[in-house]
Image 1 (cartoon, rainbow, N blue to C red):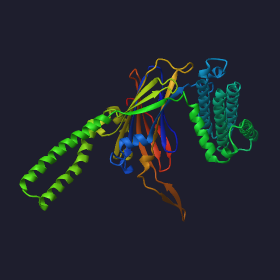
Image 2 (image 1 turned 30 degrees about the horizontal axis):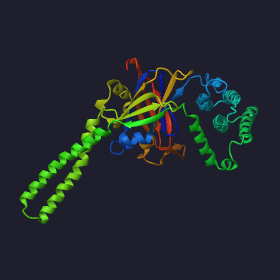
Image 3 (image 1 turned 60 degrees about the vertical axis):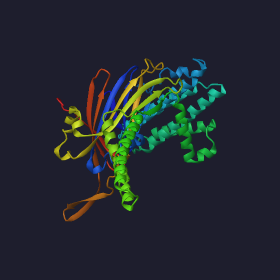
Image 4 (image 1 turned 45 degrees about the vertical axis):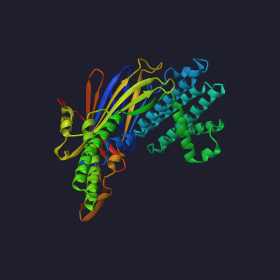
Length: 457
């Protein structure tokens, strides 16, 4: 799928990302097929709880020219553009460097051959070094603007050092590339000395790993100002839910009052029997009220959007994009025909009873143009799978084998498999579909395998 990408984010989370043009409108659907043995259902994990605890939406300016932060490099000079734009342009430049760094570090770590890994690492270090020099070429004399510069410079220097130290710690072991390792270590050391020379961080902060890490998280959020859009989540069915609860309560209370009046008519005096009957009537009311409300509410809200996320520019406060979200458990008969056909292509031994969870996102861009140099915004939605593995069984098994007359045993872990179908529909109503097989255990996603779609499916 070239318009939308599903990848692993962290140990137990997925990321769906796609780009949006000005005045664009896109929709994507995720259909999770969760085996019954995982213990997931509307009773054990409600849609509302999963949405608020494990689904995160993120939207920001985007460019595929990751190694060239566009026209921002010339705008971060105080002599060019309006002074009020300095912070925004500085943040755009810094944010773009961070995205480039994170992307290239992940790609380099995938190289397991030393002959490929180290030249790529040296190339990346030289590129990042050039971008940092470009940033530091313009140091504003104004104290207020200098504070913005120091925050961005401090964070990027620290982030670059951390990224390359991690890169070397996970590098393929080889004695033939000592000079390359020394080059990268020298680069990391120079960044550390640069921060010390500029007194960016106090000794107390540097001596505590938690303090320095939390400070850098704060600086990261500061450079996202004006780049990452603010979001406001609205519950679309709050008033409808109140009406349903109120109506059900009114009907039940009317029935209860009828029963109470009949009981009072049959008993001319207050007796133990009357008190007992009234207790039974009110007890039944409490039992059936919640169940009846839940059943009626699930039927009424079926197929309705549940949340709306409004993304706005953090500086101008103007609305940039609107995202409407659905999340609900569905039955097999509710599956679209094409999605059902994809799920049925599994091998017979992999077909098992499962709960179906459907997520849908409709995103509409409200502006006709973006900031200069940016043609897209990137939409990312993160799905944490931790609630899915809450009921999985712990422990490992043993696999025994016979080697001549010797019995050997190996530890094996318990794994589970989630089938997922992703569909993407653009504003021209062109649709792409892809099935994924997600293998996971209690601690991590082991593999995400895209299943080829056969012709005619």
